[in-house]
Image 1 (cartoon, helix red, strand yellow):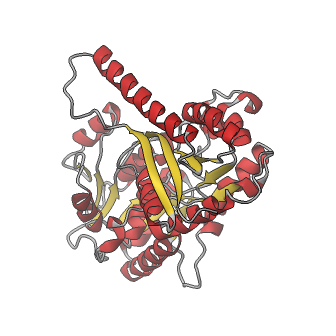
Image 2 (cartoon, helix red, strand yellow):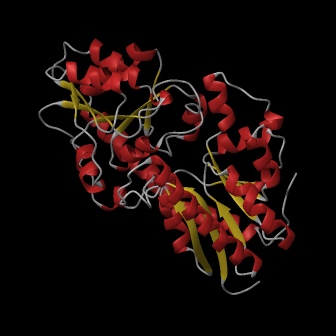
Length: 378
């Protein structure tokens, strides 16, 4: 085994998305491993003013072609010892594996979340056997799943050897853990905060319904950060003088952390669809890192995963009953500050122990070291 090895990292990548950022940060920490970063970053060309979509697409094609040339050259010249393909990149996997397999260079693919489950949610299912996800899972030497529950799902759904799937959890960038959090939240109101993407499984509509049901409790304020779709934005603006507040998009992470510190409660998934039963989203982990109470739709699998770790209270508050259950949970918490502090303290400990960059580094190290033992391809 060489004393210094190189892992190629490639695929379309979101430069400041937590999954991509924490994986890259973890790779940089590994002893005896160098990183050849050939990712195509989604914001790489954002600084250039485009006069039209055709020019934009042409420059994107040139950029990807240049990177693929660099990737192929590194592989064929035996300059790498493993290839890691980032999430949502089946096209990259099929291309890169054509070059790695003849040279017996192992591939690792980040499964992230299941495309099959997304299709099932949106009722546009294709047969599993012909699904791209199936082909990637069968063709890759190793795979990364975000939770143990997801690992079990992939192994069962695609009948693949579970030994080739490594659990590499979602994690928060170091910034969310470095500064001491504010546990008290906002002294003048009870603030419920939502930030990030506005996706179906996040259940913004459930939050808006809960806010309407709590409209008489003027001390409870719902704050929304990000770029909501038009219908949600209209609802937020119409209720600007009520208990809803739209705070816009906050691009600076330090400022976003300050906004979260002013909150008392934040959200995980609010609808039991897609992967709501298999993982907490990034926003939930970020809130937990700042010692906030995360309210998440009831999930026995997640409740088992986020056990109390010997503490009196668990790190996540699960609710059931749709918007009414969510509203009841918020009212329950409003009058229990000590309980909230206890949950928040446990939540932050859980992030440190299970969802930090250091934990991701350990998991990826184990995966990379396994590339030098027997590969399981069935």
